[in-house]
Length: 448
Image (cartoon, rainbow, N blue to C red):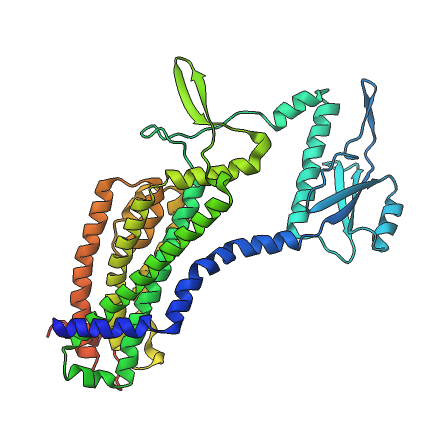
């Protein structure tokens, strides 16, 4: 056992002393923040408004003394689109050809069905997907409102009620009384699933590469002369696990410091929203106050409220537990695969069966986020090969204790089997050279 810890110490120190370890540990949280924030900043800074001239050729209608235009003056300019109007299509197209606008939208009445046709003419600047979609949706919405006003003699107030019915919508957990924050929990679950997937493959792959390098360089022959081959394998697995935990703990600390800095700079983001009491029959329900005039501030406060409502100690604890268990499961399998590899040409037949379950779990993440309490999500969070990813996706939504216990116990049992399997393969495969192994031959080793 003393030799095992010597190997662990050697492997651990050799990895944490590398410059790449410190660089990745320090820059990891910053790079992740930049990956999220920078695209948004660049998108906002590089936006240019698409200039469209609208030519409304639909005959005007007079209702109660008001002249009603179907489309003229109805389009809403925004940060992406700028609308102006013209009564002459020839004049508008001349402006387009002269580069004084980006596009001309001609709306005409024809004898076809449907009678309304719209034509978007453009020059050098072809409209993007967002611009075309926005113009199309606004055209349809304006036409609908104009038909309701002209053909059905509805007032502007009636049309406003139809288009934007004011119904406050709340979702509350009847067990805790807390408001639901499903959208943000979904994002958190997806991030947790991806991060644990990334970490397991990152550190499990390190074990496979380390074993493979020692085998191809024949260093393992010297090492096995003084220590058992199984100690070599599990010394690497434990050492890389400690490296991974060191990096994760540092990332968590740095991330919390970044969040603390943001909360000090913008305390309103993490301030609790005002509560209001709503009388429903004989009951009084407490909910977050909705102020639609301050949508942006409400969204920031909603994020802060969600952060406070999530049980982060449980999430961090479960993340560490599932990282350790998932890592030991896959690192054992990756270590066994590393002992089988003699060159880079025969990797796929051994690595593919190990990687497929985790890839399958990632493919299922969107389905699990949509129905985190569904039967498929529950079973995938119990199956050891997929549970490290799927359970982390489900945890922000709340998971019964018995499911966590069953999932962890099944992982422990499966790890024991994986360790036995890896030890059998490693003991024989690590000293085999110059031979293309097959699964049939590997299976024979278990009979020894």
